[in-house]
Length: 82
Image 1 (cartoon, rainbow, N blue to C red):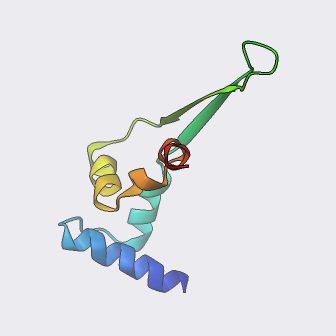
Image 2: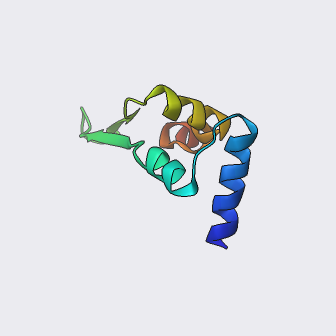
């Protein structure tokens, strides 16, 4: 199953001109980090504040991120959709 998913990932990116081996694709994508910082509530009974940020990406990472539509899977986007 995972080999099928990796093959589909490689095919999708290859179709957009990103030609890399599966291990290289996984390494590049695996270096993208999403960080959440949780701040305590300002007042008793209020909700904590959550700030989410993605790591600084290289041009290649930004391109792959966009091609694969990964923005839809970030915590910030998921929270907004709820």
